Length: 193
Image 1 (cartoon, rainbow, N blue to C red):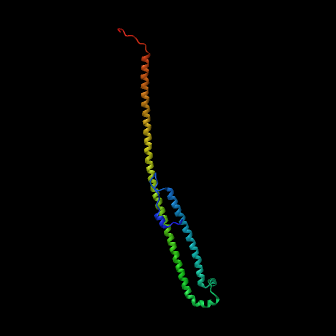
Image 2 (cartoon, helix red, strand yellow):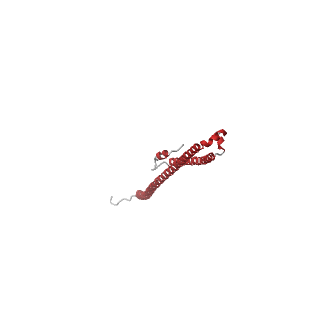
Image 3 (cartoon, rainbow, N blue to C red):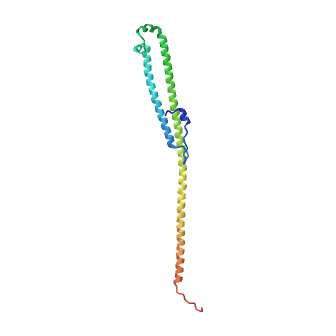
């Protein structure tokens, strides 16, 4: 998929459901696409530069009047007329060369702009992801501290509850022992009854 600068500028990421920020996988996938497109553009630019070098050599050869005459269809009879047509042909070649160089410059400039835009967008996305990551870590640390405090409070409550229950059971056992002793003791008649 060819990525245009507009694709980069208009790209929107989905928010996550359980934390603030963008879906990290979606951001990573988009950055992978940007990298692939930038690499493709660099390869294409290198191919154009190579092609330009070959074209420059061909133009120089044509301007020198070298062996290229036969390849462009100039007959030996026409070569005598070639002297008269040399000036317009040179002008045409120079115009073609200028146009070619202009297109190559524009292509290089456009490539550099796209690469710069891609780097800037990637830097913004990474910076935003880092800010989101830090905020999420701070939130999770706060939640962790709260949960640790709650666990400690529950453990303290458990200790107090166990001690209170143990005391209550001990009191009940003591009371039961007293009741059993009273019930098993012989009844002594009271004088005067």
